[in-house]
Image (cartoon, rainbow, N blue to C red):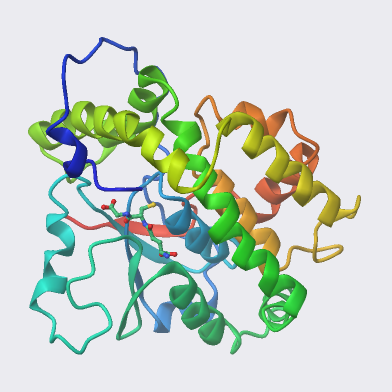
Length: 292
Ligand SMILES: N[C@@H](CCC(=O)N[C@@H](CS)C(=O)NCC(=O)O)C(=O)O
């Protein structure tokens, strides 16, 4: 997601739109069966709730019942990640202004792929069979190619879909109303300005990624994923591999939005349902949200 700040200056009259989508989707609860290692390796993720890259990381953690905390970043001010400005200039996260950023144990890491690498490395100490299978899949070149696809070809289709009309963009940004650490002003400004800015920026995003019809582009991408699944329950066979989790995580970013219908009407809808069951409810492993 590009920063709404860049587009706020273009903000004109804001149409009234309903925000019926908004529902709390992430409030933390104690993990029922936390992987033993997660008590030794605390993970904190700086995120936007609707960011596909953040959701990708969380899908892996949720699947492994690995506890973590999230810090919701204010998309306008990004004040929660201002600490990156204080980092030494040779630190990889110095001045980094995107999400996700994660603290994995003592390592501060930017970029979802690098975060996932670090998590998979920690998880490879786990004994549970499904986690062992997941970690070994990360070395498979076919899995690596689909993981890359999820980032570079699938994730980029989601924002143009989420923000395709002002009403859909307004719905997508309604999550800010539920963020407990945002003030009333943060909620209002991000909901209105964020939705407007992203709606106005939609055309730019489409031309950057050469998308003419965003709905059709997403449907085609899902058909491609269906071909890869080749009627198997998961790409990984009888259980999800890292690519299943990355594709699912990216798609889960649009949960509850009008874009979700595209997934439900696609040939991957059964797979999506199986993934939802395997990964579990969103945020089951989230233990707390931090006040800033
Ligand atoms: N390659 C990065 C991409 C991260 C990214 O583009 N994040 C978006 C949110 S979906 C972002 O923070 N954009 C900058 C902004 O909002 O200003 C990753 O995989 O983590």
